[in-house]
Image (cartoon, rainbow, N blue to C red):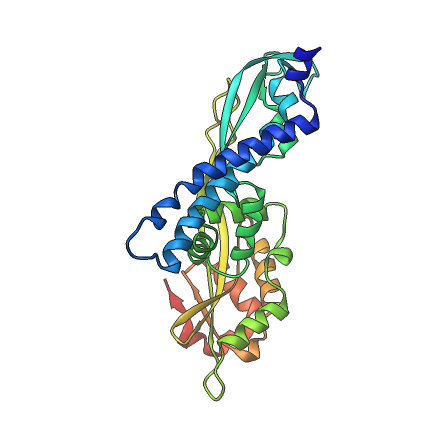
Length: 321
């Protein structure tokens, strides 16, 4: 009986074990603050803040990791699990680990790995229980990053995201995140609403001065697409498809203010539809319109249809990239 209790601790004993672990981790991290007390000169507030910030990330990330392991112990210790495809009970092959990042920092999640030979499928049930994202950066970070992306270009969003959270999200990763997020959304959901765009234009405008310049840049690029490989299946040859997109921003007082952007592999009609939606939410009487693109006819068909008032100044602002 006592052995069974030791292998399957109740909620209270599990929490006491967790509490002791947390106290030990806190003591370990507090040792990093001790050097501040032995300095001849008292540290500045910035120095104290930097040390505590590093300690906070380490403690919180460790708590996330240990809480997940404690509350999912039964799943972590099971030797068999049903295949999600055929329901056959499959024996555990090995334990594997995944490095993940949340708002609390970087954590290492240890979990059992199973493989169904009949379905040729590898799986870890704990991933589903925890609702882990396939990406290293988890959903809480992705949702926060999307809020930055809705207001500014990828590079600026990446920089401010790192300054705010301490987590590095490269502009390339920002681009991939936005692309994956947009797969299930259309331009009507991604492009900011008219009220938000009008507010940004108002903030970029100066009384008694000329209206800010609104730049509409549209372009297309051929991108390679290939089907995903299977475990024992080679990837197909793939093909090139054209991704079309635009970015709309204000050039005001020597700074750029992002308003809207959209890109997707698709037809001319799709990009025209997206530009029309963006144009319908922009108070064109508050800006001077600049259209930028190369010589592709579909680009100018789309932009001049969405922004017909730009035709009057097309000779001045039509720039061949």
